Length: 122
Image (cartoon, rainbow, N blue to C red):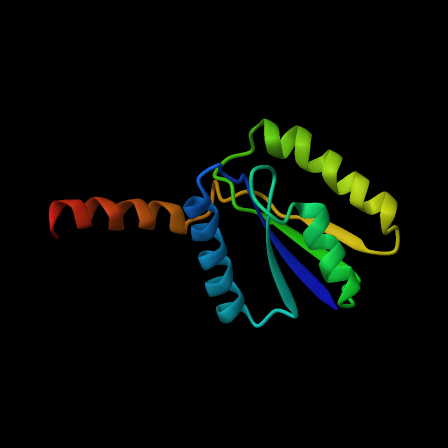
């Protein structure tokens, strides 16, 4: 069974974390995946380790981490590999895969166009 962890930065403003949870719930409803968990690097609950524990307890043998980050910055280059390595050492039989961040996805430009058109009243 595969678990999908949507990994966001997290915020001290809880409504921002809740907005991530809403998007993750929409993702889960659209995707038809076995299990989906939101998780945060900091300032939000659960963290990635907690989400992984939850999914493993529910039978996940594979976890796909999808960063809810625009670009490959220091958190994805430094922090995420360290966290994944720590989880992997606790659960060596679980395969963990990390996808690229959102940057480079063709729909990002379309989203920007949509936002600009909304502002222009188009």
